[in-house]
Image (cartoon, rainbow, N blue to C red; front, side):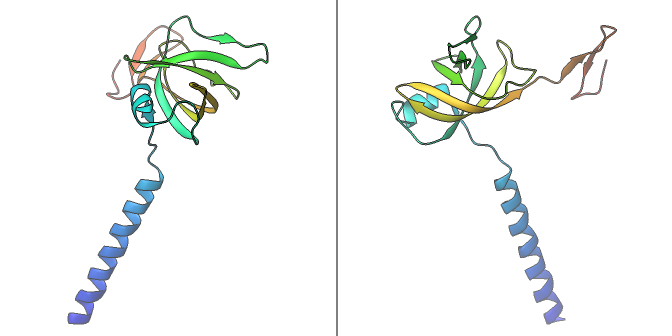
Length: 135
């Protein structure tokens, strides 16, 4: 009986460890623009993830065909130069998470995740809320 208890206890510990390990590997940590300004050297830093919302009327193409825009968390705007695949959902006021680095207070990125809302509009104009599965 005592041996069985030890095996069950070790099994629970192993499952708990594996669950925590898997969850930590799948979590995306990123800085908001204000957090980046406070915690990161904006003149030159290692790669990090930066999140925020795309500022209205700031999206443009550079002479080298890179996309330039600003991202904000509502308090601070940071200039982004993006050289990578632009997702179809990318637009103004959309939430984005960018992977890149700072150089001379400009964030250079080559990878972008776009956060979308849970509301979709079908071809016939009906609105669906995916989170609550309602029309």
